[in-house]
Image (cartoon, rainbow, N blue to C red; front, side, top):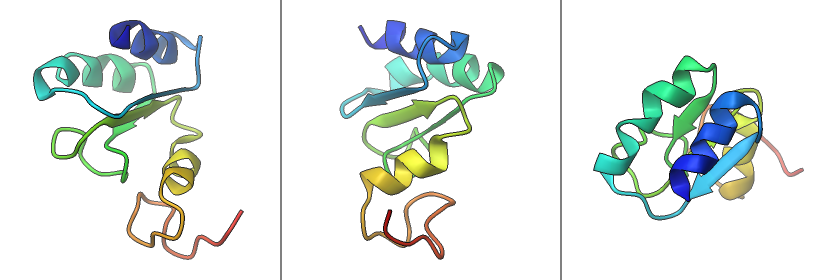
Length: 87
């Protein structure tokens, strides 16, 4: 399930976990776990995960690239968007 996927990211068993539909109350407990392990968690546009729909959790290193790939052509998605070109 969802919790297991985030656990895998936090423990290094997976690099990325995406979830297109997630309730705020389900996400609240996952944020400190993923971030405490050095990962990043945002919505699909790279913004506050509690303000958007769905979530993306990564090992941290891949996060900007994942957000860019989820939002092709967007200049506002995540920190990598300014100046990002096609892959």
